Amino acid sequence: MSTQSSISVSQQEAFIPLSVPHIAGNEWVYVKECLDTGWVSSVGTFVTRFEKEVAAYHGVKHAVATVNGTAALHLALLGIGVGAPDAVIVPALTFVAPVNAVHYVGAEPIFIDAEPRHGQMDEEKLAAFIQQACDASGQQLVHRASGRIIKAIVPVNVLGHPVNMDPIRTLAERYNLKIIEDATESIGSLYKDRKAGTLGDVACLSFNGNKLLTTGGGGMLLTNDDELAAYVRYLSTQAKDDPLEYVHESVGYNYRLTNVLAAIGVAQFEQLDAYVAKKRQIATDYITAFQNLPGIEPITEAEWSTSNYWLFTVQIDESTFGMDSRALMRYLEQHNIQSRPLWRPITMLTPYQDTPRYAIEVAPKLYQKSLSIPCSVDLSTEQQTRVITTIREASLANRS
Ligand SMILES: *Cc1c(COP(=O)(O)O)cnc(C)c1O
Image (tube, rainbow, N blue to C red; front, side, top):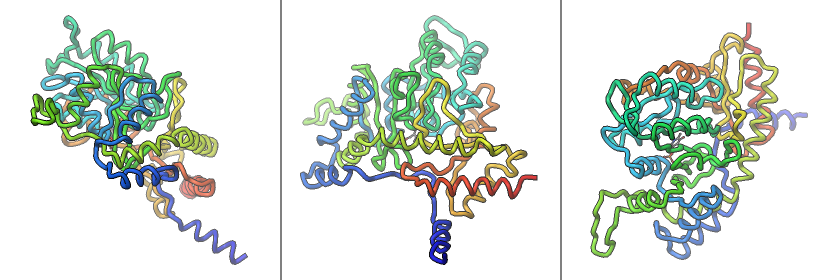
């Protein structure tokens, strides 16, 4: 009996992280191969192999590996020819990187609100914004207040859940806008029967440490457009027009992924299906467990999607749950369980405070109410049970 209680105490104490990488496949083998052969830089077989395999999986013609997802987004914008003084439509609720990429090319972001159920860019508000705040002049859509031509939309598959792309696509086609799909959180997810990462003109993936697949840092650009692919590949490797004589006709970037990291990527990619299955199982178990707990509502996949459930997130209603999301975060922290709020809406961030936006009402509420909870690929049943029990206790202790 004393043994049992000491085991349960040590389990109680053990830290449960939010979401950590799972390195348990061929990573060591492939990295060793790079080191043993000396092929460590951007020229190497693993970079090409990683690109080919990811392209084949998505059924797209081209994949260009990059140092990170932000670089892929930057190249995507350059590739479709966005620059000053254009405008680009972005979601208010997202990690900041895609908006920063818009800023890098000198364009102005215009923010659209999130819809309340899945946290994605609200396609109805997007349509209303175009109706009310823009003029269609010839082939171009002009934002009336700023006079800027809107060139592109960057929908983000927030938390791994695909946006409702079909209505966005219809608007994009009608108004001659390119779609850059930020699929950095959604590798392995489906929109209807299509893979996330194939839903726009260009898509970007990320292999950052906190993403479903990781290379430590890394990214990829996907497209079926031959010319665009060739151009961004050229830009990503310092724009070499004559590599021997150092002739550069454009300003290039040093954005190509290295072979060592691509080797990790190839190994990670072999495990994608298993990872997605595990994430979906974790999500199902949380959803079931929280069904009878008032005041906690998981952000779930939409009817149109099969999500990779990258970061499992719940919304906390303070009055029914007994505490707000941040108090729950602190309670979990005291019990050695990591959780994290959703991103502060980009419209609230200093660099973007004065940028144009349309009817931002839902994003700040989601930000206030949401909390992502532990969902690592290797989360054990015992760990998940402890998270669920602790959340239940927090509510019961504080509910009036
Ligand atoms: C992670 C992320 C990125 C950027 O990817 P990095 O590889 O970290 O540069 C871009 N957009 C979104 C929505 C992300 O979550």
